[in-house]
Image (cartoon, rainbow, N blue to C red; front, side, top):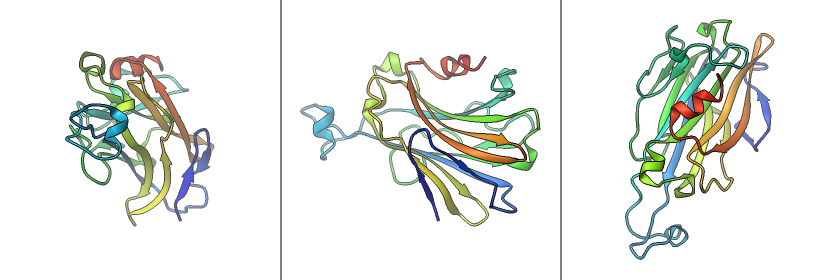
Length: 202
């Protein structure tokens, strides 16, 4: 049964899930549809074409809560971690359509012991240049599945008002002794791109 989390909540992933060694993390979002007459709020109730907003999901691999090597960032430009434990599905340019927009696969048993935390972030590509922010995005979420059974384990809907924010720290998967846990973060930032997000963890 899926566990629906609220901002700030934490939950065990592997404790009580014997044999769970692989995870599938799905991130999704939809552009707010805008009427031709304008107005974001009017667009919520139907109307003309959606905004061309390119959101990018990434994973930052931390050692003692810090990013030690630039190569420890998995994103559309580096779709596999150096150790092979994390793989990214690739870039989705629009966010349109049902289901996950970008997917990340994790082999927990292959994540080197030096990494204590995996941080999942989403940023709007060229947000400031295009004058776009997460107030133009709706239905954002992060969910964790067991890829062997396709069972959804955890879902966190990012329902806060993120108007003016250009990036989101959505959630974290972190070590707790010999187990792994998930934390629903849901923090918005004004970082201009992935590099700004990454610098928070240096």
